[in-house]
Amino acid sequence: MDANTYISAKNQYYGMDFCPAYWDWLDQQFTQGQVASIQLVYDELANKKDELSLWVANHKNHFLDVTDADTQNKFTEIIQHTYTLPNKSKIDVASFLAGADPWLIAKAATTDAIVVTQEMPVPIESRKIKIPNICNSFNVQYINSFELLRILQARFVL
Image 1 (cartoon, helix red, strand yellow):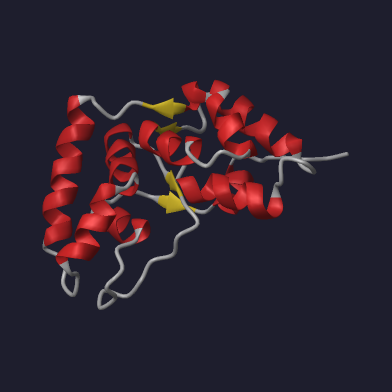
Image 2: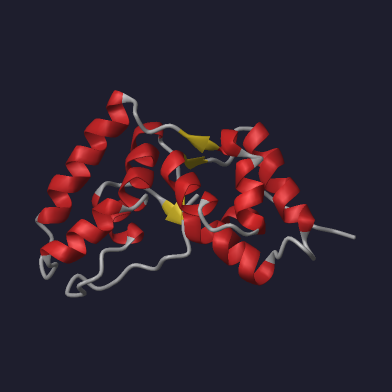
């Protein structure tokens, strides 16, 4: 799961104050091996100093390590690929590579996982580098949070 899936859930549709069931469901799905994220997403979220950072700190085991050789090798491939993309400045590439996104894609590629993100693909001529575009380049499936909920048949019923 990309950082934006957690942030959007907290700030918009699954606020921790009115939908604690969503957060309990995430914990349950992690226990069942259905969802996870990576350490770099943890690092991004833990630094916010808000209720989400507190939740993240209490669920650190949801965030997988990326130091294994397979993930490292795939990350190297993503670096090389990203530098060959047309219409991207070195600053745009460096900005993308400095975050968790390429690591999330590398981990998904090496574990046959699906990336969950709120990002949408951008046209090739765009200067932006987005998760869906890189996922497509590496045959990694991606979905949004709502698709995840439907696939895993989440139910938040009173």
